[in-house]
Image 1 (spheres, one colour):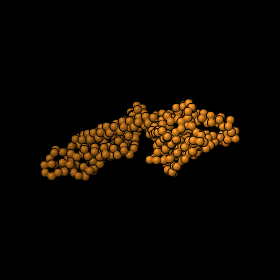
Image 2: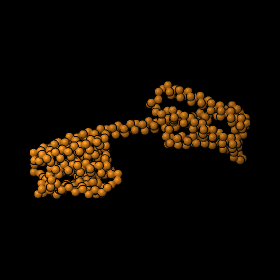
Image 3: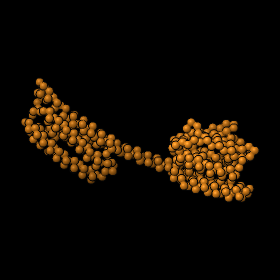
Image 4: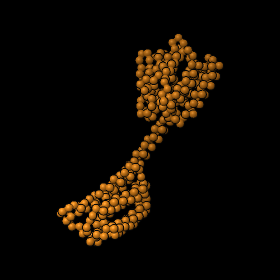
Length: 339
């Protein structure tokens, strides 16, 4: 039982105990209030005892059934039958104990038959009201169970979707890296060897965090730095990259968010020593900004459509937010929300 269910049980039991005994307060009133036809002399201690007994009865049977009946659909019929038999047996014991103790303690019953029938009526009414409360609580449990199952299914779906999106990144990156490596092998074999070393470092980092969907901003910047080194080996002074990112405790972004932006900036712009491609990475208004100058290449590499679309879908799934893209005559800016 949850704390909320226990609270509901206690409040319901208090209500039942008071509701079934409040009419007996009239016998304690002076004057004509006593002439209500009760076949025994009723007093304050007896009222307190009967009310307390009614409360204990309700709490006991409510707790018994809520503890044993976990889920309606998951409870076999034979278990329900056994529980009903136990309830019936315990009901008889409570009924006998209540009648006997009150009869002995107060010794003021003039009509025993009416006294016994009255006790039976009150306990049966209590049992009926508790049964209604138990049914409502069990229905609420079933509803919560369905909501949890739906949430688990939705989480599993999103997890599979993220894994599928991330599975697209590594082949995409590998294709671009091998293209760059092919050019370096022809131009400068020595630098190509260093390029392979850094490339293995990037893949090692990527694979070591393949289970993490959201990653610390500092770790993501480490991966970005490795990618920057790879690009500088190829373009040297053709790249002018500036990063101004303060330390933000707890900031996270989807894994490998900056790598596609860096690749796209180089892929779609003309990079040369005479006219370097400038890239600025900074934080502003709770978002990570990635801005690069525009000098679009005359002959662009064919686009796979994976980069920005993939990144935006991962942001929507993981953070419920979208990236922002702004394009002017001179700059291309992507804003990444920080979690």
